[in-house]
Image (cartoon, rainbow, N blue to C red):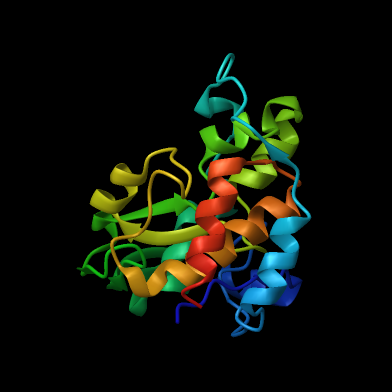
Length: 211
């Protein structure tokens, strides 16, 4: 089980870390581990279902500004690397070493430059699912969301294989991750009130069957 935890914005910790904005100290609590498959199914049933995804017209990654600064030349990427890694070493608050196990394909990554930070619900998918109507400020919050299971450290190969696909056309090669992958995808879409397609919902239900 991997932990993707919310961060505490405490002034005292920020002062000690010499950073501004987001503390790099994680709260050791999994934000979604207590949710069972039936709860995820209920959450999925509450999402708006559409026959097909919306248009990509007007989409640019720049409309989802990331990664936000967390002070002292650090950003949200450093935060996720520190949170998801083992034996992590930092220089200031920049992550310079550690080990990461890619949730999507099980690959063990032994350097931070080998790690991609993936958006669980890809930015382009979010655009097609309702984010095209958001303000840039809201899209920025979505792209840097540390409170929900939206950001995860994975291998570059897995991240590129996934691209902007939803679970109807792409699933992790690590089948033991399917249950949590579906739950996390549903959690993010429910939190941000994004739509799912008919095929996407069916794929998510199939994956919940592995829980």
